[in-house]
Each structure stands twice: as structure tokens, then as C-alpha cells.
Amino acid sequence: MVNPLEITEMEDVVVRFSGDSGDGMQLAGNIFSTVSATVGNSISTFPDFPADIRAPQGSLTGVSGFQVHIGSCQVYTPGDLCDVLVAMNAAALKTQYRYAKPSAAIIIDTDSFGPNDLKKAEFQTADYLGEMGIDPDRVIACPLTQMVKDCLSDSGMDVKAMMKCRNMFALGLVCWLFDRDLDIAFNFLRDKFAKKPAVAEANIKVIRAGYDYGHNTHSSVAGVRRIETRNKVPGRYMDITGNKATAYGLIAAAEKAGLKLYLGSYPITPATDILHELSKHKSLRVTTVQCEDEIAGCASAVGASFAGALACTSTSGPGICLKSEAINLAVIMELPLVVIDVQRGGPATGLPTKSEQTDLLQVLYGRNGESPMPVIAATSPTDCFDAAYNACKIALEHMTPVVLLTDGYVANGSGALRLPELDRMPDINPPFVPEDLRGSWTPYMRADNGTRYWAVPGREGFEHILGGLEKDCNTGAISTNPENHDLMTRLRQQKVENITVPDLEVLGDKDDAELLIVGFGGTYGHLHAAMDELRAQGHKVALAHLKYINPLPANTSEVLRKYGKVVVAEQNMGQLAGYLRMKVDGFVPHQYNEVKGQPFNVATLVSEFTELINR
Image (tube, rainbow, N blue to C red; front, side):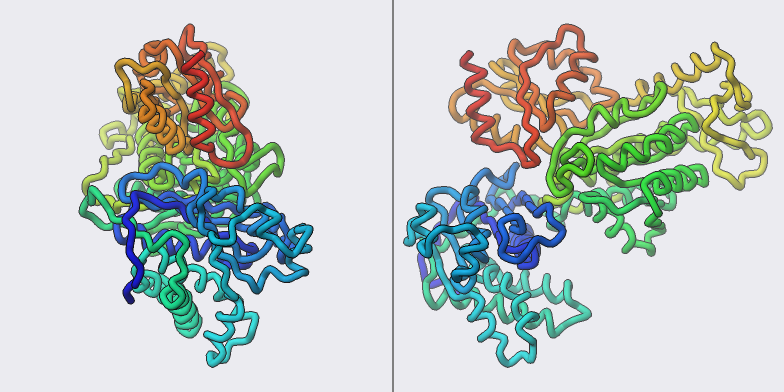
């Protein structure tokens, strides 16, 4: 298939698919992302789910969105505003048009803009374009629903089944607009519906119809566009979500350490996909247990760790609250455990499908007693792989529970991951108790770095008991001795402080910045993009983004105190800023805080930071 229109090469483009939560917008967006990642484009995605489990069809609260930014070079965010908006119904146009650029092309299904549809979307007149101030010349209006019915009229499918293919028509049209290779999309569908080949072929037929519609009608507002790939790095790539990358990182760490992997979990948005993904990999010595509640999920993982497995538990903020007692058990028993917290909007049930960074202080201090734990924060969907691997390495090598922080944006978003080679990944060496200590070993005997030796049950001569009561540092027997408790508290603290993490890297104008931007976790892309824009405007700006939060990198104080003006930007009310004030003497930063359940807007960041520079 060849586009007859002139093809314009672009550096990047943003596409947003939107429709009812049952319209398959996430699938259409995922396929378009996969097609783009497979040809080497850099991608960043943002699935924007409705909070309702199943809102009434056509309602404003039931709109589901999926935004993808594809670029010829590195892209850091899903984009503030889209170049192409797909609106499958009136409610989608009403709620999603605010995410479109003034010049954006808008694809609509005119069959879903009837009087009843307009009433549900709270339009006041039949002139919905005029009511919203949309130029009709920017709209690609097609009777999409009817064309799908015509396309599948000889398929034997009922109307309800046909309607599930509407998203593929829109995808085909978007593939036409950006000169995408349809064969990649076809292979994706044949793999996804391998057990239902008739469904796969029906969807493939509809994608072709959407592409052909664009081809035959020259449906383009601004010409056909192509995003070529620059700076290609050889390797195998896949479009991967943060949750799936987290799962793969855990599997890789277990394989490298030579251990079985155990996940004890309880389903919770937005962390459940980690449980789903790991449950598919029993052949890789992965055991998953969906427990009756959060406490059981964590407690079972503590038991698996005692038995010698790489043990993990996954949850979100509400689950961290419930798991805290069992996590503390792992702290005092000094067992390796990886606790994955996919943060969402709170408090309470809050905003289950939205993203925040509001669990930071909870994972640092939200347990009774002095209970130090390392905390790592993943910076992007693809970084979740490395972050999960490193969390496992720290947990196993230092015999401690570790928290891996991600968030809804990072977990559900996706990027193009270059598949790593396992033999090139860092070694993981758990401190198993040496054989020459047989007969003299006690449960809290430590290696030179302060880490407790790990005696896996089943080794003769190393039988032992662990538990939640404080133990004597020499014998392992229960102890309420004041001096012993003080000593054990300090030993547990020192063990965490002894963990070596990479230095804090400063990007941008690190030698002479007017402003240093500081952040952590999933805001990395937006803060990096804001820094790039400010530098392009002639400002001297640098970025220091924290991935290791406890312990902090050794050079953190040096970096933060070097610059005259520092702003800590985070999606909470100032938790990182407060933590850094406590850890770095004399550090008094400016703060930029948002708690909207949405990713940062780069244009807003640039405006706020420019004002701060000019003060």
C-alpha cells in the first residue's frame, strides 16, 4: 500500500485515542505504540482510564483515553497536547478536545454524534463543532460505525461483535496518516487472538478498511506524515509497560541469583498487572499466590523469603498501609523482601486509576519503631526493569526488605525497551552462611558489611528460629535487654547506610546553572523536557533526579548545596523537599507541587520555572 499524498517527515507527533471505556482505545493505542516501537521510534505513552468501573455508555465520566508520543529521537513524555485526536463519540470529543493543539487533526465517528449522543455529552445544540469552536476543516468526519458493519457484513458476526472492531478502523486510519507498516499490527493481532483466529482476521480486515478509507479519500488535514528513526542502536526492542517491565526485572534477578521467585499479592489498581504477568511464567520457576488480603500477601512473601526464595509483594498505597506490620516483621527478621508500591491518588480509595507521588514518607517512615528500609524509585516505564532488578540485588545482598516505588503513570505507560542480555547484568550474590561456620553460627551473625548471613532451611547444622520479638545479637535468643535493643537498632540502621548506590547525576548546565531542578521517580521525563525547553530559550538550567532515596547518594548534599537556586518539583505537597531538608543541613529549596492525579504539563513547568529564574 502506497500513500499517493506527499509525505512530510516530522521529528515527533502526539496521537490521542479516546472513546467509551468499552471502545478499545487502550488496545488501539497499544498497537500503534508497538508498530512505532518496532520500527525504532522512541515512544512514550499515557493510558488515561476512567475511575468508574463501567460508566453508562456515552457518558462524560466513562471516557477512556490513550495518548502516545512518537519521535525520531528520544522523547521523554507523552506530550502536553496532541497533533491528532481520535474521538469515537460525542463525550470523547467534549472531554478530550482540551488535550488537542489548536492545529490538531480530529477524527470523529459521525454515527456516534446523534441527538441522544449529544444529549449525554451535554451539548446544547446540534452544531457541536461550532459550540466547541472547532474549525470543520480540521475534522476528518466519517461514518465509522456503518463502514465497520459493511466491512464485516459477510463475516457471520453479530452487531455487538462487529462494534468491538470499531477501534481497529480508527487505528487503520491513523496508520494511513503516519505511513505505518500494517504487517506489524497484523502480527500483533494474530498473536493476541491466537486462540480466536476468526476474531484476529476480522480485526485485520477492519484495519485494512480504515487504511483504505484514508487512501481512497485522501483523508488528511495536514498531509501524510512520517517519523523516521535517528541514532538507531542495534538490538531487540519491545513496547513494554512499566508493570510488565517490573515483572521482567524480578524474573531476571531471580535467574541471576539462582533462586526461585515468589510473589504474594492481592489485586489492587494499578499494581495488579504485575501479578497477572508473573503468573504466566511458571516455567521460569515463578510462583504467584493471589492471597485473601494484603496482609496475607506480604506475610506469605516473608515466609517464602525465610524458605530461601526471592520474595516479592506488590500493591499500591492503601495496601502499603495494611502490609506495614508484615513488612516490619521482615525488617526485624532481616530477610530479603521486595515491596512494590505502584502509587495512586489518595487518601483512602482516592483516585485508583490516577497517578501521584504521595506515598514517599509512608514507605520511608510508615512503620512502628525504628525500621529503616532502602527505597528506590523508577523513573520511566522502561526503567522499571532496571529498578526492579536493582531492588532485588540490594534486598538479597543486604538481607533487608526494599521498597520499589513506581506510580500509575509509569506502571501503565509504555516505552521501547532494548532487551538486555542477562550475562551482562550485574551479579547478585546473596550472603549465604559459609560452611566453615557450621557449629558456631548463630542467626544474627554478620558479614563484614553488617549484613546478616542467610541460612536457608534444610542445611544440617544451621537450624534456627526467627520471629518478631527482639533477639540477642550474639545468641539469637529473645532479649529485652535495653543495651542489646539499642545495639540491634543501630546495626539495622547501619546495614542500610552501608549500601552503596550510584552518585547523583546532574544533567544540563551542571557547572553554571541558574536553577537546579530536583525530582524523583516518574516525573523524570517531564522535568527533563522542561529543562531542555528552558535551555533552548537561553537559560542555564540543570536537573538532578533521584532514583535512590534511602540511602541517598553520597554526593547528594554536595550537589544540592552547590546551586544558588533549587526547586524541588513533585506530585505531592512537598514530601521529598521535607525529607531533603532533614537530610541536608541548611538546604532550603523552592517547591513546585501538584496533586492532580495527572502527569506534569511541560509548558506549565517551563512557565513556573522561568518565573522562578527571573525573580
